[in-house]
Length: 239
Ligand SMILES: [Fe+2]
Image 1: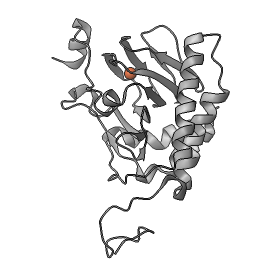
Image 2 (image 1 turned 90 degrees about the horizontal axis):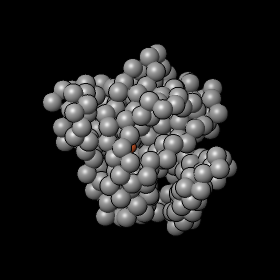
Image 3 (image 1 turned 60 degrees about the horizontal axis):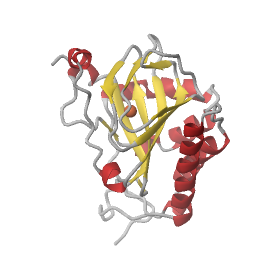
């Protein structure tokens, strides 16, 4: 017998394939993404304008298609101890709607590392959760949406994404990419396929970033996350 209301252990534990439109909290969170990618500025950059359009058009098609929700087991990582502070900061910032919408589903999030072997220096400093993509929880093709959380005073080593175009949208905290600027809530940073990037976070507060990946389905299903093998990156990973 199915358990459409998720009443718990007494019921059949088989995951129930809800549809997106039966899960308003997921819809509101996706709409926060769509709104930001539609209304945010491109700063005069043609590449960012094209990326924003690609993300929001793909996302609008996902929402309209009313895909299945793949229930994942909620999981935490040590860094999620910083999540309440990240929500507090996010709710006081320009992306407060995004922070609130994520908080509403925070008991359903599956935080993970994405690497077979996580550098020891990062174990307590970082994790990400997916919101939409080939793996769910909202089933989507040609697009992955998620959030990444960093502890204060973190260096996330240099990496790039093969065939995947990535943007980060800053929700909470202050951070820098490639030591070229300080990004505040509301900023969008575009990393085109293959572009190397390295992230550092400020000393006192966590950083919560929303991210969007667009690219070929087969790559989004198996992105093969790897750090770049630069000397600096090897040193940062302690290998
Ligand atoms: Fe990245």
